[in-house]
Structure formats: structure tokens, C-alpha cells
Image (tube, rainbow, N blue to C red; front, side):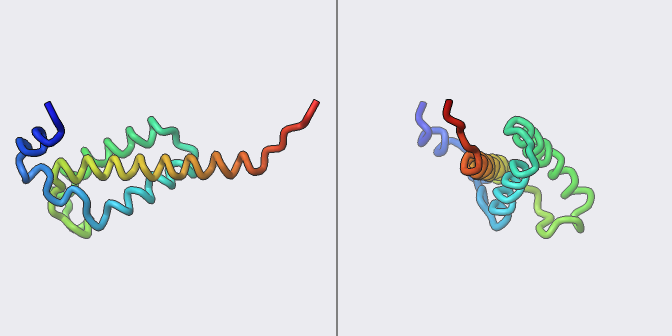
Length: 107
């Protein structure tokens, strides 16, 4: 089964607006997770929790959100992917910066 087949058979409403103006904010949040020392698994768990928690919150308290429309599955999925991309970038930047200031003493 190919990815094209799955995309052709997936209802459009699940993939509409998969990436929106707030996707970049999720990248930033992922980067902040890395800066604050949250593990990759922890960042993934919090991103998934938020995407699940966000849907009922948008229904009950729409005034808290700039866009109160409930996200599609595709949008929630790509928000999680964006968060993890941000975490990966942040984690690599921190790791690289640490290695710049690590000196190896020769024996």
C-alpha cells in the first residue's frame, strides 16, 4: 500500500489546513522544550496531550483561542510534527554549543 493510495483514500476534511499560521508557533514551543531540558519523549507526550486537550477546550472556551475552529486531524498531526522538529533543532543547537565549550585534556 503506497502513501499516494492512502492520501487518495483519506477524506479531504482530515487533511484540510494541515499546516497553518500557527504551525511555526509549535516549532518555537518545541525549541523551548529543548532549551528547558525536557526530553524528546517528554516533549512528544506534552505535544500529544495538548493536541488532544485543545479540541474540547476550543469547544467549551472558544474565546481563549485566536481561531476557535476545531483543528482537523491533519493539523493536529502536523502541529505535533512541528513541535518535535523544533525540539530536534533546539536540542542539536544546545548540543553543538556545549561541544564548543568542552575541552579535551590530552594525557
